[in-house]
Image (cartoon, rainbow, N blue to C red; front, side, top):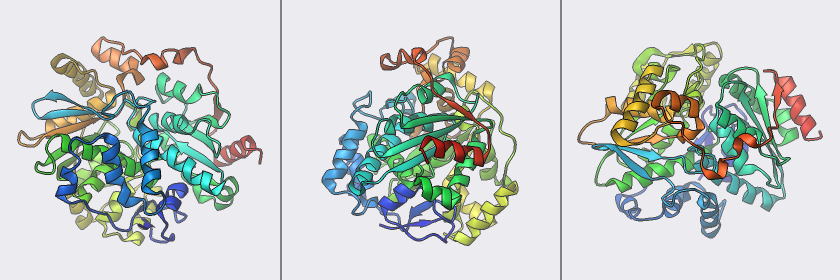
Length: 462
């Protein structure tokens, strides 16, 4: 299995090198050269399996000879053994033919744990074999950062620096990043929004001298390993509801497009997915784009669903690559235009995207109303991001096809917003009960590439 860049200029890599590299040296994102497929019989055999067994079956074709079967099974077991639910990703029913996929039972209470816990295990195994060390730099709108820190804290071969927008994440999200005491993790509060953090991250990857000096690696959703791990719960949940004999639809609260793109990969692998629905908050650039209005950046509006407060959705580049017939030059041109503010999509590529994805949006008022309604009608307390998904799913679902909405975070990560909408302040799980008593370690840094590079090299003693 080889991986190629969406911009067509970087060399093809193995799974291990793709995982450890993150962003391609031509600025593109890595995707599989070919998408392996599973037969209906192979998918049907997942019924009744543990989540770990399904994960092995889904991901094994993508990893080549990076790990033996025995090694990979052990890494998967280690990754998910600490989750707070035996099913790992349980389904609950909200309404007739509408189901919620709870992806918040991991150590940091967000869907990012499914990918990050496994990435941490794979990095440690691969780096240990090479006796190598890397510096991970990540940008987060809230959940990726805490999941990355939880996965890599205290590991021997990794230093972790997480950039988050100062004042634009919830208190719980911030404290999950700033309270770990391990010396190999560093929380950096950037003066700006998430798009600024993401842009500085890409700047660092494109500064090859810095990249090579600190041995830079990335675990944002630009990392293919992240997307791959998220493909698994599409299979586990769909099979629970009757796939492959039955079509299933999914609605995904989406900021950076990685989670919904994982659904597309599941569909390409043979999972009978009818609709893939993108759900956005008022930062609705993806909704507008998928409705034919082009991809044109505006100002980020802070919201009660901060992990979706994004105007530049990195993984959308992967979707564009396939929509343009895997033409790297065309994608590179679009990304150049994005740097100038935005781009329009050709009619043919737009048709491809609209054949795969549909979309909707939710205002703050609609999000609050959905939180209150779900509690009243099902007893389920939603986080604001999950509520955005549920609201859009209610509009898009069809009676004949089960709809699964991805619940991306535990409501306790956003207690103020949830309490304002529902009257209930969700408590943190017992293992996190002392989160607000722990000492914080954080460095505030200007939205400036040189300042960030200087700080990171200084922290590494370089």
